[in-house]
Length: 156
Image 1 (tube, rainbow, N blue to C red):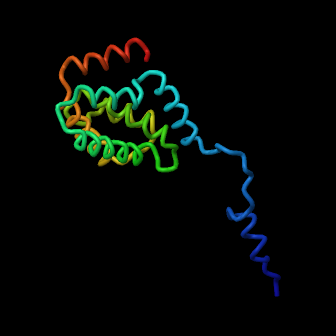
Image 2 (cartoon, rainbow, N blue to C red):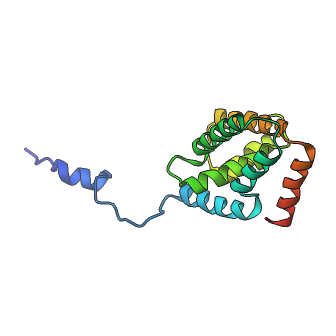
Image 3 (cartoon, helix red, strand yellow):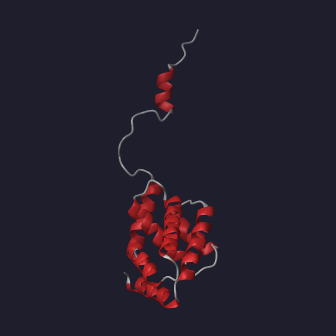
């Protein structure tokens, strides 16, 4: 009777039960996300600048602003990834505001821009982010939006 191979050897050879290498960022998608967000931090206005502009110029109560921006950050977290730091998520929220501030709904251009920055993302989260940004933009006067655009062009 032939001898059967040991199950533990087969598991080690063909399974992922061996000890992790601990090499850090081995996932290409995670590395790509973090590099894209670092690059975006330099180009778009920061989350703090955006909040300051909202508190100064928005035609809404502070509680409405706080609730909507909190929802935008939560939506950004679902797009960016729940494992990212709060600073990265806030940068992602500022990026989402920058992408959706001049559009009515998520189009192919915006979807491609999000996919190239964050990788695969939930489409419902992008739609929710677009509606939240549209709500925020509705509170701001035209001069405040122009100020945001000029800050971006200056590289702030």
